[in-house]
Length: 106
Image (cartoon, rainbow, N blue to C red; front, side, top):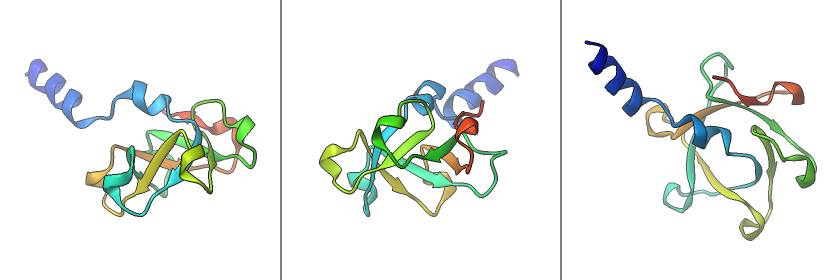
């Protein structure tokens, strides 16, 4: 039974190291096949994998959860696509209003 629970956990939870490495400049694309990461935006921070704070300056987006939205995709570190379906997402984010709350939630 323990082996089954471990296998389910490995296949159905996002890779924590990947989630914690998503910071810096991001560019939002309109098609999922163009994106590096597919993200679902949650309305509650309880179930989110990453709490995101939107920075106004690219230089301050230097920690996990700190994002700066680029206008040009060539300057972005990651290209992201926001999906309306939670099951299609690589991980789940919640946009917080407080910079100190940003980061990995688990």
